[in-house]
Image 1 (tube, rainbow, N blue to C red):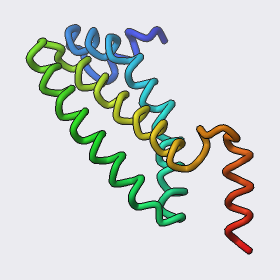
Image 2: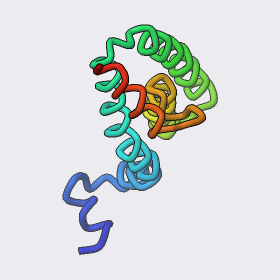
Image 3: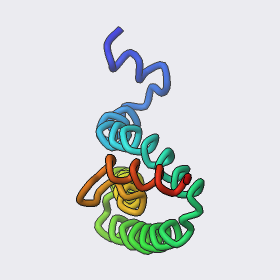
Length: 120
């Protein structure tokens, strides 16, 4: 069954099908980043790194709010909403990786070594 046939199972409205096709790359982007971001968030919660989480979510809230306002003013529609969600996921992923020590000079190896030293 062709992609158009699958979309017809969801809706017969051609305009909705066109929007679904247009935002598909954004949907893939969020699915790619979301799982890793949630996992890293769990690591920070387990470490009780609440400061990093608070900084991240403050920055994400302000930037996502601004992005949604700009997207609306620019007439970005559904694509602007999905682009903001991509930013939400990727922004969290990068921030959580940074606060988790994965982006430092020693990267993941250094983070693992530091975690091992804390257990002693």
